[in-house]
Length: 271
Image (cartoon, rainbow, N blue to C red):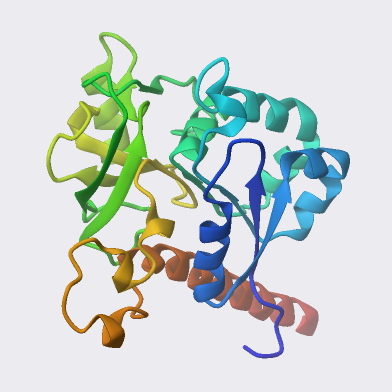
């Protein structure tokens, strides 16, 4: 492992995004590396996108959520990065969109399936107010999501005003059934927290490599982050918490895929 360069993620930031540093830290705790790059700098040099192994769109309020949550950021990516972004997607790079980043991924059409018309959106919470609380989540056992692999129950915080999963009118059950049958439901709330259809908290694309979720894994990297921690705080405050597992999962996946490619390349050269 030591002879290889670390798996390197691009953490995209911009005006209003406030979780970039924590997200980058998650990849570094998992043994990877991360570079925080402003969307303006990336637009000036879009070719640098292909230097990264993966992409993270952190939470926050990109560009003040003007014109709708995540809309301006999605427009900048689609029209500013153009073919470079298409090539990045084509190489199978893992992508995560957290909260506002999830909203961006949906508006880009990467979720739930970039090859199909979009029938899913994130609407204002049913309560009509911003929600900031910790929630209990579960991972469907048949989910294909690479990021959440091995997880069963987890606790993460949510903080959003526009995080309710909705589907096209009259096609709600049809759309949900398609996602469920393909294992694209990555996370569900244990209880109904915002009116999201079937308590969906996160979904992935059919490959399991592109994940969008409303809860914040980067906000629960260590045991001390959880609000209920009371005993032995000095002993366990730096124990890795469940949020760190998502970053560890994808770094391990990327390393494994790199090794497989190298092995195939060796076999090809011997022929």
